[in-house]
Amino acid sequence: MSKAGLSKKDERFREFALHGSLWKVVFSVGFPLALYQTLSLVFRLLDTMMASHISAESVSAVAYLSQINNLLSAVGGGLAIGGSLEISKAYGAGDFEMVKKRVNSLLGLCGMLGLVVLTMVPFSGTILRFANTPKELIGIGSRYFSIELVAMVITYINNVYIAVERARGNTKRILNLNMMIIVVKLSLTALFIYVLHGDIQMIAIADVAAQSVMLVAAIVNLNKKGNAFGFSLKSISFKKPVIGPMLTLSGPVMVEKAAFSFGKVIVNSMSGQYGPLAVGALGISNNIGAVTTGPQNGFQESGAAIISQNLGANQVKRALDTFKRVLAINLMIGVLGLVTTLVFLKPFSFIFASSSSGFDTEFQNMIIEMYKFECIGSCIPLGINAAVISLLLGFGYTKYTLLINFCRVFAFRIPVLYALQKFTNMGAKSCGVVMCISNISVTVLSSIIAFFVIVRICKEHNIKFWAKEEQTQGEELSPISSCEE
Image 1 (cartoon, rainbow, N blue to C red):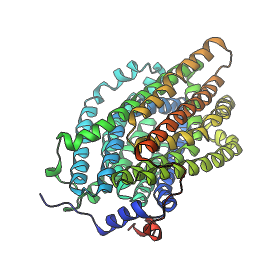
Image 2: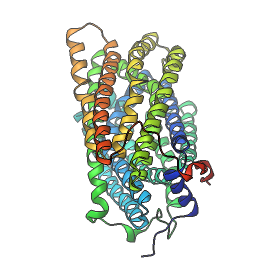
Image 3: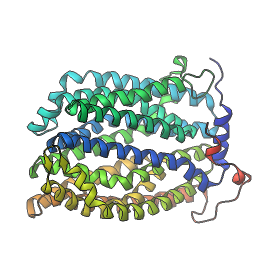
Image 4: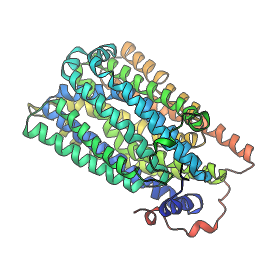
């Protein structure tokens, strides 16, 4: 096996991430990911808008089935997150042979998962019935769901590729590729819906085509021999030293994502008590909230990667300082997002309440009522929570992230929604109220956990959390933009 090495660009980024100005590192790596999250949200919103052109029931079908897709995607997504953090750690430690083995072994694991998912395609209707999907939505969305399973397999590989590029600091490449995906997806969806007058199955076909664009880019960019991040069948290894740390870190993340998505499926099912429109309104309310939480999650992802790299280089204080900067940025995004979404809530909701059959006032009012409650608990509190998750993921405390998100749904959301439905007459508004209560509650929980984790880290490494970071020679290093092609 040829010795794994780094390109000059990868070497420059590693030096920058470990020794450059930390504000520049966090912002230059996080901003493209935050923009990517925002663009992904725009894509989902426009997708929903096009579905609403078909019918309000189609919006509800897409919203409901997307949560089932997220449940099945949890294993691949969790594996990509855990694998990415261990790749970043080996990258920071300078163990490039291990980087190559983990990159390729992660691709191998996700490839096997994809084969398992493909076996589910013939049983899509059974899966939807098992998930307690309303009968009217099964009729609309069964074939849509089958096609989305194919898209999910491609997404498994794409998630690994994105994780690898994130570890390399190529966040601009991630942004550019996802912009390309969005253009392809929206163009095809618009063609299928507005010109060819297709149904929601065509939305899923457009998704497969768009994800295939990323897959082609992954094949091209990972096909570089001798590079630590290049694909090599010989480097695939399922030995414990290679995949053990990735599986240990990924396990709780996979369970957390699956449990969280399963909980949202239950919430959607409970929301169906108020009719199919309530499910769609809740999904749209969540998407409007993601205008704020999406960018915050982008900084969460970048923060976790930067923390892992610095831990690999034994720079614990710098890793903690990364968390502080992510927290500050997310708070600013939260305030801006709260104001912006409330100001434009009425025009947003008007767009989604309009379809080819006319404007639905009841649907618009339902969206507005839900979001006015949801935004109180999402914009600022979930920004704090995202910063805490980046800290916990970066330091490897994935069992705590599992606890946090498990409580978010199964302690703070489902029981509260049940109580609101049983003991109050709020109606569909209760869906927004429960989002507010659960998001604030989980942020309180995560903040308490973060406090004790930080105290523990500081004691173990004999450092002070609020002490000023020591200035290093690397402070004059150029930001990531100079490292990008």
